[in-house]
Length: 90
Image 1 (cartoon, helix red, strand yellow):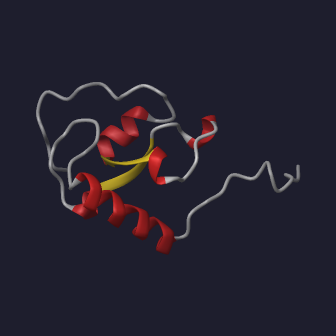
Image 2 (cartoon, helix red, strand yellow):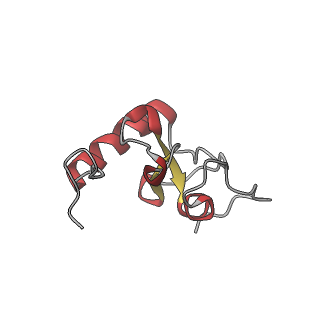
Image 3 (cartoon, helix red, strand yellow):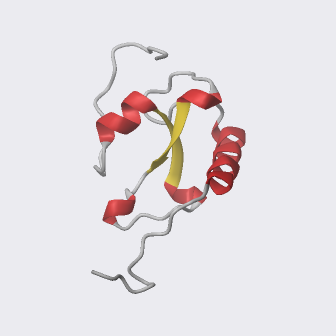
């Protein structure tokens, strides 16, 4: 099935991802948005507050930095991931 241009989900290239991640690091520091644990920038991933699968965008307002476990546990949910008992830098 071919998608019309307005139906395609926009994707970010690596340069755009790096730029957004850098802006978020300056704005929020190197803490996971969800568990508030400190990580190196390499250990943080871009997480969509409103998942793209649910209509979310790649705007800075919709992006936060999350550690992989929190981002993975949350999946495409609108809700935060389950709370962790302690920080574990994977």
